[in-house]
Length: 226
Ligand code: ADP
Ligand code: ADP
Image (cartoon, rainbow, N blue to C red; front, side, top):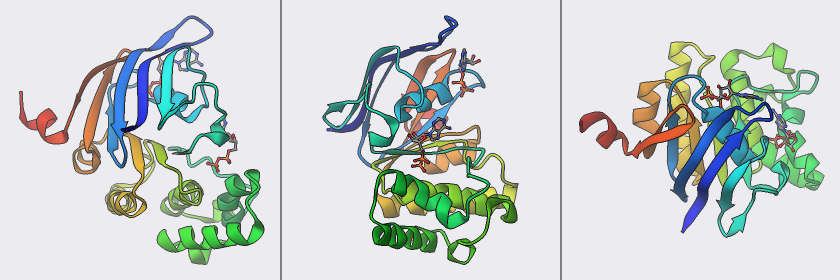
């Protein structure tokens, strides 16, 4: 049983631009799906439709046994990590991580427990009182991931999460993400331009062009077979 299923999903923006056409994909539990393709081919639009941040204009999105086209973002079992971190600048690291839980009316003690557990996994426990501006790029990226993992979602969406980091940190965080994937047993959909990330992290790679899925294959098949 696929944990996430796109059935003929399409997106036409209000100005008439067709950004995604007839996207079909069944994603099994615990897969690590990579989206690649040139800038503007519809990767972010697809991710945002899955997250519920962008309306699906045709087709159906299923999570487990539920068609979620009209389900609000906060009620989908999904968390998204952005390239730009999207942290709230006026809030501490703790409050940034707790925000999504409080929004969902999680009891205070439980919030506290979940934030500390996630902070420990990501090695940011010592930073919980700081504001985002007092953090390095790598630390901010960890906080952004912390915000996502506190909710223990079934599906993580990551839109070029490492592209703002320098080369050395990128390697380190790539390894962390791989470990996180194994530890959390979640499904990940991950957009990247980095071939090493695609090859080492992905269970399958989806190649997009001009809003159309061109190919879906395992890393080995994609890069070793003509
Ligand atoms: P990618 O993530 O692959 O770079 P996007 O999904 O961001 O691509 O964008 C796909 C296409 O949709 C691009 O041509 C982009 O200009 C267009 N697009 C994105 N957002 C909007 C919008 N709100 N209105 C109209 N066109 C948009
Ligand atoms: P998280 O749970 O990942 O911390 P939040 O709960 O802070 O996310 O998000 C608050 C609400 O705002 C949710 O309904 C979420 O889907 C929505 N949201 C989050 N990021 C964005 C964004 N970049 N654009 C639009 N809505 C967003």
